[in-house]
Amino acid sequence: MQLRLPRYCFARAMSNPSDTAAALPGALVISLDFEINWGVRDQQTLAQYGSNLLGVRQAIPAMLSLFAEYNLHVTWATVGLLFFETKAEMLAHLPTVRPQYADPNLSPYLALDQVGEDEVRDPYHFGLSLIKQIRATPGQEMASHTFCHYYCLERGQTVETFRHDLQAAVRVAAEQGMTLRSLVFPRNQYNADYLVTCREVGISSYRGNEQSWIYKERSEEQQALYKRGARLLDAYLNLSGQHTARWTDMARSFPYNVPASRFLRPWSRRLSVLEGLRLRRILNGMEHAARHREVFHLWWHPHNFGANLAENMAVLRQIAEHFRHLQARYGMQSLSMAEVATRLENLSVPSVI
Image 1: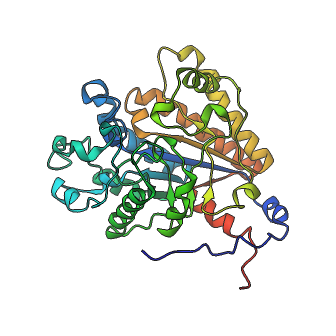
Image 2: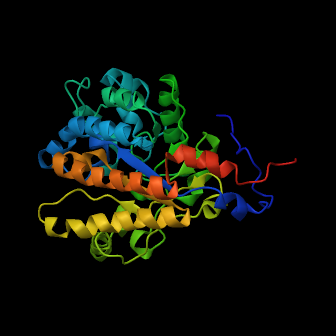
């Protein structure tokens, strides 16, 4: 595959990038990890979580309607295996080189016999009709969540298998008239060694992790209960900061890291008494970004809205209303990850070479 270089040469110093960045308003970035069962199959069964996954069929149209109402630009990081109409098409597009995880349960390729023949008979593993709805909604960016929900930090996978996976994702999107410019690493398993491959296939931005020990990238084996607890507590109380990003910081490397600020946890009846704290945590981060002309990056999975849709949509509407307030007061913008990358390109000095 042909190597695609960034528009600007980053080896050269930027000419007063802070002056250019100061002219940019704050921005709200929203990215969604669209995966249905490909993202949870190794952790939960359909008996346990199937209702949430089926709920995606109602959640995505509801979210798209709200995004259109508030003119919110959103990045949909989509697993490549969702792009097909039939199982036959899916099997014909599989990469020939695949990850050989030490834990075979992590590989979806060993579970393809469980996949139905098409989206009508198997709504858990196909998403083409939903992808068409997303593409028909203004301001929505189709991006990559890798082809097979690839785990970049698990034992047994390599740079070579990642390259084949990402090439497969780019290829199937291109066949449907899409150019993938942004990437979200599944399970937030960011791996710096793989950024060269991202650049080679045309990826210009990715969602990095929050700068805190709580959110440091790790494999499934490295997950710890106390860190999960700390992340849960941080969703309600400010333990780790706002995690907004400065334009000049993001512009220093390519592909651009558009780091996460906050995960929008699903509404919980058990924790409903704390809902005000959870919402305030997000709104305060958005306001901080708007006031300081920085970027606030909110993310979640469509299946997080697959249950308690009314309650989750009510929270999302409050976030959208707050954005509208910040837009009127501070000029805050709603940007996809690709739109952030376009603005970052203009912060660098054009190469004279």
